[in-house]
Length: 179
Image (cartoon, rainbow, N blue to C red):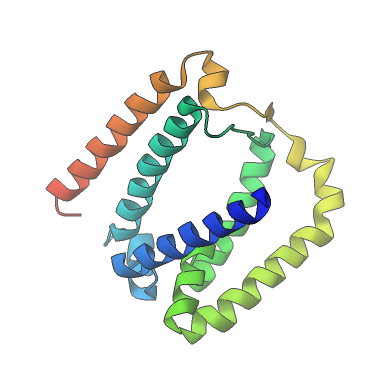
């Protein structure tokens, strides 16, 4: 039953996030392309707001003992390969996976056909090459399964509070210069 509850909460928050993406304009192709061209920072503002909200929320729930974090092992190689796949899809279509879902919800055919097909093709190519990548580039620069506070051996809030402050300051600056 607990797993079903988690799935239901995941669905609720996913729908809410998609709704907010749509209301913020991040599911519109023109807004995303303008972000890539550095002429409209709507997407950056939405994502930074989500990062600071999520970061504070997650670490608050961890602090209260409501959740436990289980970071996945990471490496420079995984980030490079993931970034290249993500960036290629983003540059070709003008959507990321989250905004594709929102754009499909809006009924945009480019996201429905190009986006969903692209996700399946990209996932299929990655799955096909995963065995070769797993023992090679994906292991380069392995830094384990630690969070930044664990890596620095400090209390979570020593990282979370300054990071949140910096993100909010950056958001304020972006707004104040009219980006």
